[in-house]
Image (cartoon, rainbow, N blue to C red; front, side, top):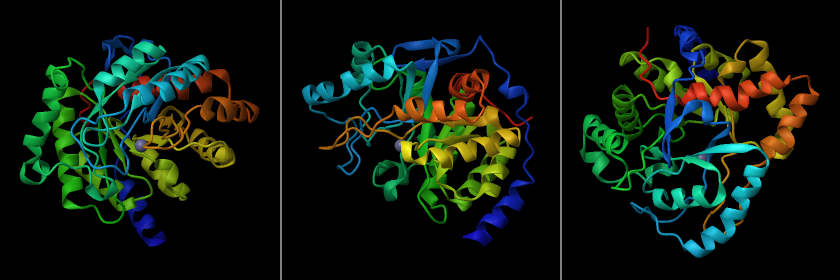
Length: 336
Ligand SMILES: [Zn+2]
């Protein structure tokens, strides 16, 4: 693993950061929430990687059926608690075939007061279990058309539009289907300006592959979120990827990991990458037959600990409010 990391880190040095201009705040920007077009300045404190509900472990289904009564009984009070903590927006990362149900998401946003943002794209983690058969037979362009259509015309006649593109790489060497879907994501980004949030984790080969493809298609790395970057133990990989201008998503926070998170955030800040950090929990408030996997502890545990270790209110605002705005503000990001 160490050898691979070293090779990838030295390769990443070739990518230059061209994102300074991309990161300037633009009050004119927008994103789509389940309620339609939303001014990006209204995002507020945003958790950029959670699952309000998902069907992890269940059979794939195009639109997932939930026991609505059970779902609402478990999740609405929880969303209200989260809202009371000051969180305004949640990016829901559950894709189609993996439990996405946008009509229910909208009802839940209405009942709880939390703004929810859904996605387009396919989830090719979990050994591709939630990738539809049709994706194997279609070209990247044909797959992209489906996602672009959701952006332009709404998802399944609901009128609800996606606010970002969610994709995934499995562990190990990048597979053909994972890269085909990533290329479809690039086409969809170029047509829509939606950001690519890609489940990658501690996989230097998948990082290298994605950065190469972005380069090949002339897309800026600031259109790409390294999802589950917190899984890596390698500071050099973390910094090398940050240096490319990508978004670093530290998104599996749980209270016992507070020291690890603080040391990663301090390191990124020290090296000048504070404005590329995204925080979240990868929580899930309606797992099948299970308890809520929470998404409050960034606010209840991490923020106070960061403040204690010297982070200013302005820096906290940068991470929790400004960075999500800049990462997900809809616009095409071509490499300059
Ligand atoms: Zn997730």
